Image (tube, rainbow, N blue to C red; front, side):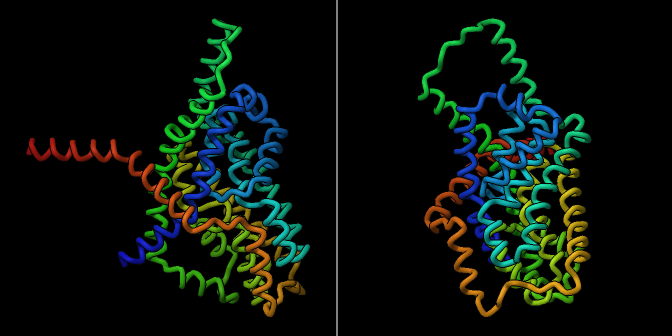
Length: 367
């Protein structure tokens, strides 16, 4: 049991760490070139145009659901409203150009069209709900404080001294790694532990057996299963295509793609701790309910008479195509990134753990 847990934990850490490191660096870069005033002007409101901008921006980035968390938090803390933040958070892992091309090849034009439409609709819907029901989580306290400080400094000194690029880059890295990186790694690490525990209790072999038996697959089960699994859109499209070819309903494929790519335990735990419980209810509830409804509509539109385009005899060829379209990270780079994220998470938890031990020590002395 312990060996299974550590194997699952290390595998999940390897999968997510590269994208987390890339996101921290990208956040550092964006922190330098994008002023908070720009983000507040473009995404710091509840307009539909802001949701469209956030959704389209997310759809063009091939980043997974864990890797997008730092980017979304960076937008949120820089002045973006909760709605655009959630729209970006959902759109980024669900759909990207490589996933669309691969879906067209393996799932066919009908499912791909539904995939694209729903990949745009879900972020817009969740963005509207976030703006409407976000309440005290609608605006980040950090962003509000930054806006007040910026207005105050502008009144004191309208002609600010230009900062050298070297200092800007250093400041960006300091913020992206020390402020944002340690904060996110702290909770991602806990989420990975919970996900590994879940995979230890419910082995991957059981999940694969469930998914490989079309007669057992239900939209409710597939939506719930996708919500807790770590799924990459590009990497899992060949598997989903094979599942549909084996007899599973096309609605199950869409439901699994939406929930599987948009949610996983490390991501959900990080959102809960770093934004709030209201946000996690809006996010998770909308994704699962929407995927179930879209899966049902897909089955209604395409069944009976749906013919899969995926030819099982050419599976190896299709999987090879998937490998070419997706970014392959060398194992050595994955290991280095995994060690970096693990170290950052441990360092972030160190003060809290130290305080716990000090409290236990005081209680032992008093007893």
